[in-house]
Length: 137
Image 1 (tube, rainbow, N blue to C red):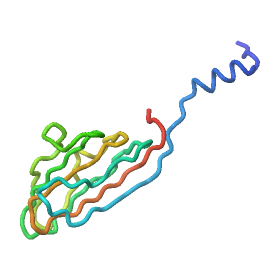
Image 2 (image 1 turned 30 degrees about the vertical axis):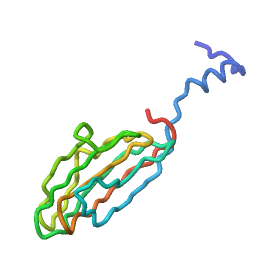
Image 3 (image 1 turned 180 degrees about the vertical axis):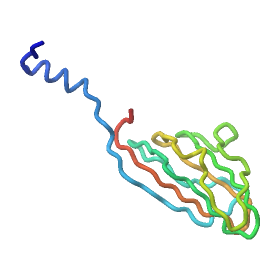
């Protein structure tokens, strides 16, 4: 089968049909000494970006078990039972772990991660992943 010659019209149709992958930029942040039982925003996805979570960990820096609550809140929303992914999740004294219910998630523009803990000394959170510029597939 012979291919048709490239013309401006079919070249443009081909361009419009091609899917362009988003630009992936590595990103990581740490939030130390989260001590409040009131929800604290750990990270907000900037406008124009998506965020692919690769790792989300907590380290208990307290000498007693720490109860961690985490919510993934949509843009314009607030932390509540409807968007909670961990509710009083126990982390042993001086221990750490990956919060696997968040890993692998694709967060949308404006979406944010909120956490609270029940300890006086608190916990340290670590988030890493990719900022995606453009629309993911």
